[in-house]
Structures are given as structure tokens and as C-alpha cells.
Image 1 (cartoon, rainbow, N blue to C red):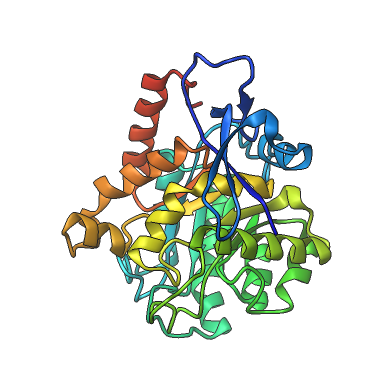
Image 2: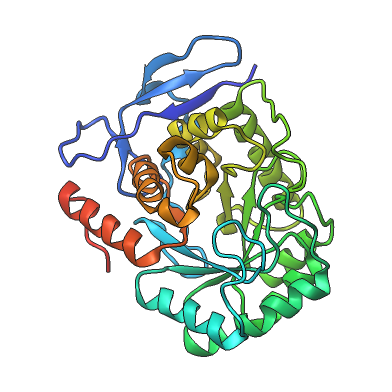
Length: 338
């Protein structure tokens, strides 16, 4: 039976000699939960974790596209779709969209994530040529303005190839290489970074009664399998980011369980990305149907994730989240943003 180890993360500057640093970052732990399916969690000391598992949790994460993972990073969302849940149809031209991407780079984004197909619940399929038409010219225009890493939010090989040709550094695949069998080869040949996200079902059907045996362990196992698959295709682990896929085939309780237990994913040995910005479950918990009114809740969850060592938060509101992060770092005395 698989045994899992979830570090119980702390961020204070006063730490015992036995403490272990998580992923070479700003958090540490000296105790952990030992988890097994069908059994109650056990509290153990960090020294009781087997060497291989401890190494996966603690080893510093290599830079992704030159971006060091020793401090929290922000990925700015640039949706070029007419039907995204909170900002669809916002840009009328490639120039306008590129200007927005540049603005995010100047107000605190570390990565710009460009997407041309909505993956919200119930979203319709977008043909590859339409997705390329929406994204490629914008990526080129952003690249002319900034050398910041750019990710392409796509699950299709032809779209990823066009994006890489336009200057993208990372492919952000919501299907974790399960939708298009050619995508892994394209990423491997390019040497680009890769984000693997967990999703249950397709965007059109994923919110129709999603079920799990144990959502935290099920998501961990799925991501572990997809990381192993990517490695088998020639993509090295030091180029891989993992994302639990909040809202992708999950109920509110599933989302909360994943957020509360997200430090378990450090055991995969990859940087963790969390995307919760403006999502529906925030509105349902906070009592607002307006996606743009969900900023306070989005920031609250982003900071909660950062206290568990999550390296990358994918957000709409870069300037506001950067301010919150800067103040969090200042008050916890864990460092300063560059």
C-alpha cells in the first residue's frame, strides 16, 4: 500500500535544528502527516520520513525558464477567448491584448499565461486553427515588448508548436498530456517547460457529479503518473510544474480539501502551481456571483497556498496580488521581492 507524506508547513524565522526546508524555498517543517488509504493520518517527525521521499520534498527546485523557485511567483492570466468565465471578450485586437500582457509584466507578473480556448465548466471545443489565430500574434507582440517567460495555455500539439515558434517558454496543459498524444514529443524536442494539471473529465462535462475515493491522494497519484509519462517521453522532471486543477471536475469540498492539503504535492519533486483566481467556488463561499468581485477571496487563498510553499499562483489581478504578497513577505520576515 502506498504511503504518502504531507509536510506540516511553517514559515516562522525561529526554527528547530531538526527542521527541513521545503523545496529550497521559504517554508520549513519538522513534522508531517503519514497518510495511507483507509487509515487515520499519523503524526510523525520529519526524521521518520524515508530518505527518497524526504529528498523529493526538500530538494531545491531548479529554475524554470530561468525563473528561480526560491520565492513565490505570480503567473498573470491573459485570456483571448470570447467566453472565459470572468474576462471573456475583453480584448479587441492583438495590440490591445499584448499591451495588457506588458502591463502585467510591469506590475508584478513573473510569467504571462496566454490562452485561446476557454476551459471553464461547460465550455465548447475550439478548433486548433482558431486557437492559433487568437494567440500566436499576441505572443509575438508580447515577446517584442518583454523577455518575461510566457506560457501557452493549450492542450493541442499544433497550437503548442505555433506558440513555441512565436516565443513561448512553457506549455500549460490542462489535460496533463492526455488529450493530444503528439504534444509530449513537441515539448520534449523544444526543451520548454511544461505544466501538468489534474482534471477529471472534459470541460464540457467535468462538473457533472465529480467523485473521488480520496481527492487529495487521487490527485497526487494522477499527477505522479503524468509526471512519469512525461519523463518517459524525454521531458526531464526539472522542467515540469504540477497543478491540482482547482475547479476542474471538483466540488467545493474537493477544492477545499486540495487547498488545505496541497503541501502533499511537494512529494512529487516539482514546483506547484495553483490557479484559483475568481473561480466560482470563491463566489459561492463568499456570496457573490460577480467574478470580478472575488479578488479578496482569490488573494486569501493565494496567500494560504504560499504559506504551504506553493511556488506559482496563477491570477487575474497581478498588481493587487503582488501588493498582498509583498506585505505578507514583509510581515513574516521571509524575504523581499526583487
